[in-house]
Length: 214
Image (cartoon, rainbow, N blue to C red):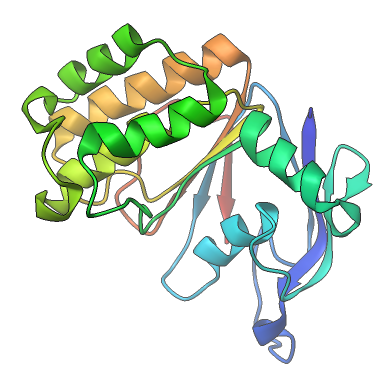
């Protein structure tokens, strides 16, 4: 996949509003591979909804979304499985980890499905993010900031053309934020992928090609 295009897209809940002033909603926006995008938003403007629409988890929107020239409404279940396994990666704002499993078990669930990353790479990421001692800790007993780091590692355990990170550093200190940014960009550049980051204030510090206001 080389492009993701939003054409006159708008959450249905905003349909009656006349005060929409957005670089994304009701516009034509094209996300391209190998470029980095920042989507800045105020709370309640549909930031997480945008990610859910692009990943096909929600369909309550007007307008169209295209992967290359294919409208995502036309994708079959098997095609969606392929997209999410091989082309699209997403770090959810709410993380969606399994609290009853350890940090490493959460990561390996993903990596066993894709078979993409070496165990040595995963171990190195745990070390870089300062959570080596948390590999066998239950996620439900970890801080949210620690969970964010685990979720990032899990997100990187697959091939992707585009990676979306929804407020990825909201609970991280500056040092870990920089490390996570470096990890994200190194893997995205290795794969030649596009990066789309969202923020309602604290942004992940990378070099952005395009700034959009939601």
